[in-house]
Image 1: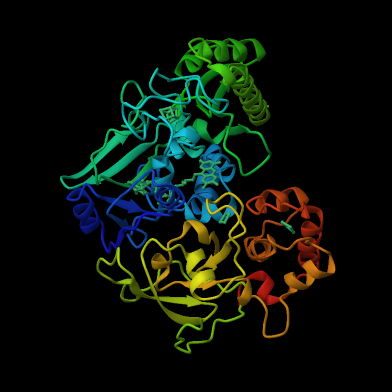
Image 2 (image 1 turned 90 degrees about the vertical axis):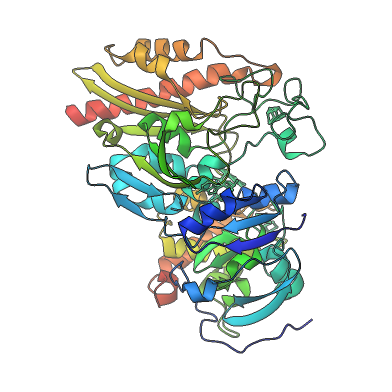
Amino acid sequence: MRSFAYSRAADVESAVADVSADPTSEYLAGGTTEVDMLRLGVVRPRRVVDINDLPIAAIEELPDGGTRLGGLARMSDVAAHPVVRERYPMVTEALEKGASAQLRNMASMGGNLMQRVRCSYFRDGDRACNKREPGSGCAALDGVNRTHAVLGTSEHCIAAHPSDAAVALTALDAVIRLRGPEGERTVAFDDFFLLPGDAPEREHPIGHGELITAIDLPVLPVARTSHYLKVRDRESYEFALASAAVALGTEGGTVTEARIGLGGVATKPWRARRAEQALAGSEAGPEAFARAADAELADAVPRGMNGFKVELAKRTMVRALTEVAARTRGGTA
Amino acid sequence: MTPPQEGRTGLAGLAGHTVPRQATAAERDRGEIGPEPADVLLTVNGTVHRVRLEPRVSLLDALRERLDVTGPKKGCNQGACGACTVWVDGHRVLACLTLAVACEGREVTTVEGLADGDELHPMQEAFVDNDALQCGYCTPGQLMSAVALMKEGHHRDDAEIAEWMSGNICRCAAYPNIRRAIRQVRDSGGRAEQEGES
Ligand SMILES: Cc1cc2nc3c(=O)[nH]c(=O)nc-3n(C[C@H](O)[C@H](O)[C@H](O)COP(=O)(O)OP(=O)(O)OC[C@H]3O[C@@H](n4cnc5c(N)ncnc54)[C@H](O)[C@@H]3O)c2cc1C
Ligand code: SF4
Ligand code: FES
Ligand code: FES
């Protein structure tokens, strides 16, 4: 590992001031991505600024009935929180299906959203990778790309976004709270993740040093009937090949509200708006679910080894919808 | 190499001991250090050690190579195997993805801290009773996870145990016996240190 300096921030203001003023400084939260990247040499900061002492780890109910997850709240603490479990079960499920118990104790919610892609060419410093080395090409296009994305890709990058939690959070329309040198601002969840386009090195519309202080979950009754389904190569401790976060409301068998996120198959946490539109007002059943899944994957671009993901994503979405629909019937019967 | 020790004791061997994650600001306060080596105070199994290290040194390397605490193992060095599992402030974490310098003012517990003198921790005894290992390389990590699992209460049935132990890979596939050892401790129940509050 290359050497670097270290400092520990005591308050949010000085953390933001320190890192914003110095392009060669980076935040260190749980370290589960950052230390890995430092060791691989994918990131080469002069200094890491440890933010683990900042008072932004709380999980609180907001006056309007929403829920605020601190940027430093650990994945394990958020997953176990009774309010999250009850009101947003798909968030708990997505968190608990991510990584391992040890990693979840370390990893923060802010770090989870900022985690880097698992593309092996991105991690391997000797290979062409536009995300790591802009303009160098993309070794994955014609390489080993079985785990890569089929939605939201470009000719410049096809890496799948690895987060599970973010898939549930995009379906919820969570809001990201940021602190920068000029003060606070909020960004809608979907806007926080950029498509690779012709600049895959740019992943978020934020300035260097802007700090995620919190993620706000809105009041959303439909989220009480929600589910996260994750399909992977082994049963646990593995990233998703395909995943779906689904919240569904029905009345008399008709879909009144559907919120769907897809993971493992897209370059960002994927809000399945086409599927949601296809479902609205339909009878909650296999035909409508299949139509919705077809609509969402219509523009999928498979490459070499990942063609199976198109069908897998559809089936994952349909199965998650079927499971949640059964719960809504159970609830209203 | 015997590092200088500052004779602070008191927490050694208290399996399941949990202290708050946040240390006092004074304990953690420090200005910028490195990239050159700097003195760092690390509390490991109840003893404070002064170690001179660069900020890039992982907790795993500090333990193994500087403090001769070789229970935690280096399997993958990238968070994928669990062989390096230790507790920081009572929570199970991966020492390979933790910077040593970030652990100032925190309590680090390794497998060496589980036994009470010559008396093995009940989980260690259960691993022996149930042949829960073959080569033993993953075992220190398995033990630190298994005792943490007891505290967390994720031991209802084998499926739950398997899920919450999945962060510890065993190349010898001793999984059925590891689960049996965990069930044995669970079913023998009741001992304070197994429940985490002492
Ligand atoms: C073996 C392994 C398996 C994994 N499996 C999964 C999985 O199945 N599902 C899944 O979702 N994830 C998985 N992960 C990824 C893990 O969830 C992330 O590494 C973790 O969430 C990152 O959080 P952290 O606090 O450790 O961030 P760090 O590693 O400390 O930081 C990550 C990045 O975010 C920046 N950062 C951190 N906090 C903030 C903040 N508040 N504001 C702005 N920037 C910030 C840092 O500068 C850094 O660039 C896995 C990781 C490993 C190592
Ligand atoms: S898919 Fe993206 S991250 Fe992977 S090599 Fe191509 S540009 Fe790099
Ligand atoms: S050595 Fe730390 S997880 Fe493998
Ligand atoms: S006993 Fe050999 S790796 Fe587990």
